[in-house]
Length: 362
Image (cartoon, rainbow, N blue to C red; front, side):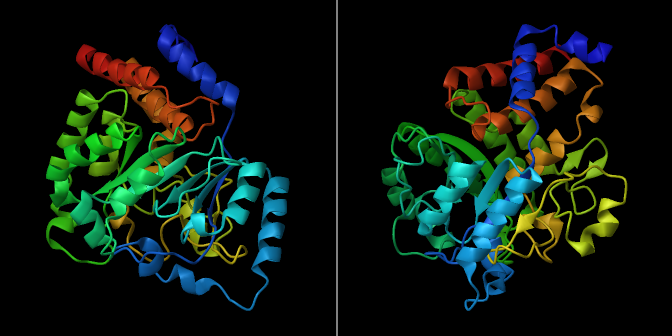
């Protein structure tokens, strides 16, 4: 504890840490709000693994949804990551989640989530590349990126959730600039190629050029990028204190899913509350983004945030390491409005500056 006290003698770190402690622990679940979608994106984990087929159309889904909300509130859940399917197609269910939990939602951006009634909802708007790449990967003849930009222009709730492929680093600056000029911030995600298209989409090629370009975006737009240099490194390299990313270290695994029992008993940390619910609102699956897919192909931002956050002890060796952990933790809380704070660019810029200063002092 004396080491923590020493680190927290830095006023900025003390402020970040105090805000997180005040917000409290996250007891989270992931929920597919619907199995329907208005797109069929190439490489979307949801459809590649047939998660939409789990739903029995003859069942009373509305009753099951109501029961799930009730049971999760009783279980102590206080945060829900909404995915699918396309959540904007079921605003009725989305409103129930918004009114009962802290939450975030991922959307493809084609149907605008109204402001009224969802005023404080964190919205991650998908983009998979510049206009042509985005449309091609998402199997559409429409300019999907332009539609999303128009729908969420200057929307204080929305950030663009930019999934970038290994061979598409040259598009990053253009996409980022368009998002920022649209009045939105950017969080990076990384393309998995679960459709096995290969070529410049193949994650086996590595994300070295992407990692360098994302770091350059942080330098250019430090108040607008919601990815830190440390987080960018961890997710693209898949390494954390001698651990290699994969099923045996992933922390967001359904704790009531029987096939996970051996993993949950292997001694590696995990989130004891977490469950990933399918769109039948009853069954759970292995993890947020997979049933049987290789975890080697997972570069999901929320999964990797959790991996860092759950391993605080490993980051206590120096002030620099602690700063890397704390700023990752804070960024997760900040993006998801767990701190009741709007997307303050000045604060984000301070976080990036702190990381640079700590790195320079090592």
